[in-house]
Every structure is written in structure tokens, then in C-alpha cells.
Image (cartoon, rainbow, N blue to C red; front, side, top):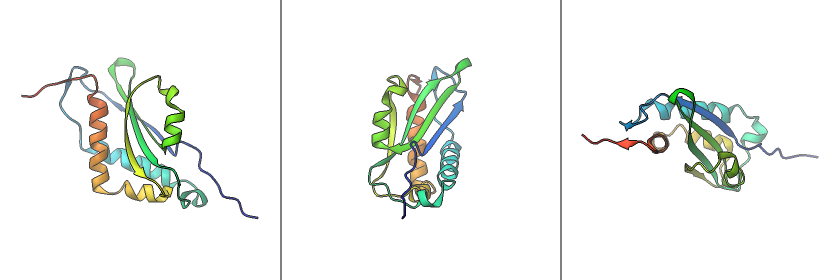
Length: 142
């Protein structure tokens, strides 16, 4: 008798701390997306093989939202989960809006980890991080 293991959601649940000027947005550090990618890939690749190879029928997304910590530190939260999980846990974010990056349907956890190595995906993650961190800041153009 064989059993199929189902991964618990979220697949990745990370938080990043940024100390940025709360009034002015000057753009992000290009290393942010690399750090996010490496940490997420490490988490996905650490899951058991029986879970990592199973394709998800549902859409899998990376979801980013921002919170404010003590002393003006920005905290960006990142989850990689199914779209259904993201919607089901909406109440846990207390109405805070975020930005979603879709990996698509039919991908295994290992496929998603491989996608996070792609330069194009890292550029997209950088854009997402910058959008999330820019929320609520003045944009100064010189």
C-alpha cells in the first residue's frame, strides 16, 4: 500500500528586515532578490523527496506583504503556497495588501526551486520587493 504525502502549507514562510528611510524611496538593493531566492530554494530543496517531486494541480504563488516592526524597521513577509491557501489565510494578514508572483500550475516543489534560480525570476522578485517596500513612501524624482 502506498501513500502520497501532501506538503503542509505554506511551503516557504520567511521574513526579511529592512531599515529604510520611511519618507523617501530611492529604490532597492539588487542583492535582495538573490537573498530571497537562495533562502526560498534552500527551504524547498530541504523537503523530503516524496513531497518534492509531486506536481501541484493548483496554482502556486509567492506572496509578499509588508509590516512595520519596532524602531521603524520594515518587515517583508514571503510565503510560497497555493493560491487557495493564500486566500484561506487572508484574515491572518489583517487586511494588509500584498503582491503575488505566480509560478503556475502543475509544478513540483523542486520545479519551483529550480525556477527560483532563473535570472528572469530574480528580476521579477526584485520588482515585487521594491513594490512592497515602496508602499506608503514618497517617491522622489531628482
